[in-house]
View 1 (spheres, rainbow, N blue to C red):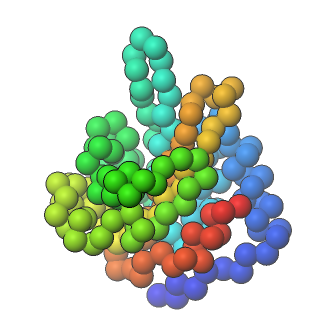
View 2: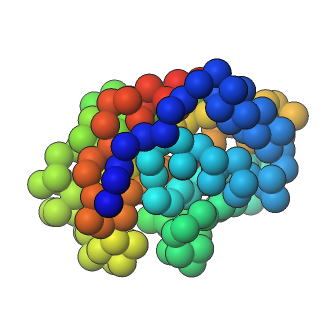
View 3: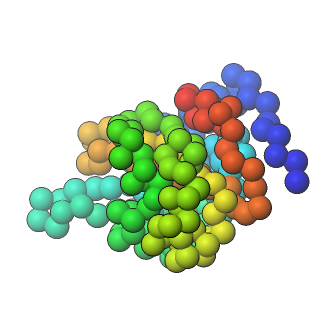
Length: 170
């Protein structure tokens, strides 16, 4: 399988920026924008979790899944995020905040993934070979703080290359 990334000229960057900005606050618009971004970074799937906070009910999450099982994505957003070896690794290494793009290898080691309680029910079930995350600040008008997009490369695959991460730095 040819994994070379498509050429990224300024027109493509502008199209991606436009799709992303037009999707803010509209959960229905996100799948097409995420499909385009996934194509440009060489991902085979993407899950985006968008948290919201209500003073009476606490945090809740909306999930958007493209080429990833929606039930699995919803379960991840609702209950499993605290067990995700990549999230735990990133936080343990002091990585967090809007605008951050991290490849799987920058968040944790393959051994940490193998040892995690998340390995069989999520990593294996989704056939995850590698991940890359991007965190985006959401406008105050949306009532949401931060959104996280997790780009997947399904097995068998090569890890995300540094160039793929640079492409998310729009």
